[in-house]
Length: 355
Ligand code: PMP
Image (cartoon, rainbow, N blue to C red; front, side, top):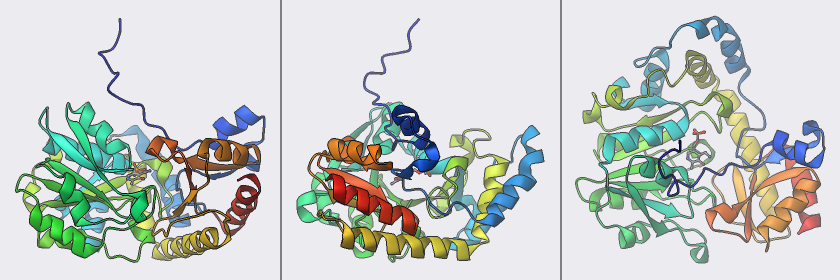
């Protein structure tokens, strides 16, 4: 017995984890500094940790599927109707829900290149295809409506990542508005704000009151420090009210995850401190690394190091795990997540030694 032909489905390549690297190098995981997956090095809010402990007894029953306290709180935060907030298992889950809601077999999405790989993976799982617009390194990864529209040919979904992974560049609001006014009626613009908290650009969520062709993705994995719990959400156009129940994987966001996210929302100081720390770290990385880097609005910095595989492997042997951007089509670049002050300093010291 074999599964169907999966050769068109490239596996997702995550940043390397501490346990995997520790095993390979025969090191104690504690000795490693993991700066490969843009997580929050300060962890979640203590309020979220307490909520997780309190929610432990709920795990024997199924979670609610819609209209949770979390949905209400997010709707309140963003000035939306609760029906416009689709809670999902991570932003990855939101990408799947939007794909299910939008794509017919054979439809195509337009996505950034380089870019986050799950957009096209999700499209392909749903028997769709993907084409790319360039976020060009030669133009310092500047994001413009023109670059998107040059490649655009009526695709059903257009992904816009701001801040962009892996470069950290932003799509200015004026460019997004131009896109919202330029694309055909059947096209949904998906604004991925997974790193939105780290950017000074305002969220695009308020544009949902003006444009019915925008959806915005957010996550609790990054600034809120809850990557392991898998909780994210999409803000969708008003008239999509009944679609969520039709595309939602039953019970995919656990009660523990939703309660932790709700508690995390209730601790804006923790997010603010995490953002301040990341802002310091990305400036430090840009100032102190001896290699070219790009301005970033995310909690990471892209650096050009020559042979990214050789450099990331050498850094790893010294206990610092960074992201080799070969899988993004940038084999000369690494992406370094913002760590704690000590982790970031250690990364700079090691990277400057090995490049
Ligand atoms: N969008 C972007 C741009 C990302 O980098 C990531 C995670 N690496 C995600 C979405 C998905 O995040 P999660 O599923 O953890 O919420």
